[in-house]
Image 1 (cartoon, one colour):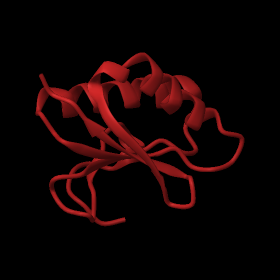
Image 2 (cartoon, rainbow, N blue to C red; image 1 turned 120 degrees about the horizontal axis):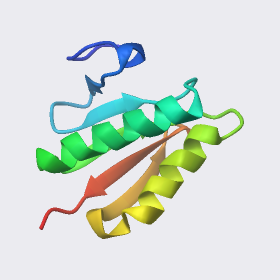
Image 3 (cartoon, rainbow, N blue to C red; image 1 turned 180 degrees about the horizontal axis):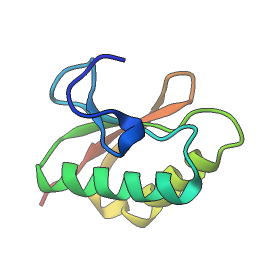
Amino acid sequence: MKGKGRSIRTGEYLSSHRGPDMPQVDLHGLRAHIGEERLRKFMEDQIRNRIQRVLVIHGHGRGTMREIVDQWIETHGHRIVDVESTHNDGAKIIRLRHH
C-alpha cells in the first residue's frame, strides 16, 4: 500500500491513495484492544485536524474490528455526517461533522 506516514502495523496511519483529503487507518488483523486504541487515536487526530472524510479498513473475517468501528460510530454519531461501506464491505468511508 502506498501513502504517507509510518507503517500502520507500527501504530500510525497512512494517507490514502485517494488523495490527501482522505486519510486511512487499517485495523484488520489487529488484536481488539490495539485496534480500538488505534481507531480512537486516528479519529481524534482527524477531528482535531478538521478532516472531512476518512477511510477505516476493518477487514472481513470474524468481524471483531467491524464491531469496534460500528461501536465508535454509534458512540460518536454527533460527529458523523455519513457512513458508506466500501471495499466489498471490508471498510467504511466516514464523513465527519465539524462544529
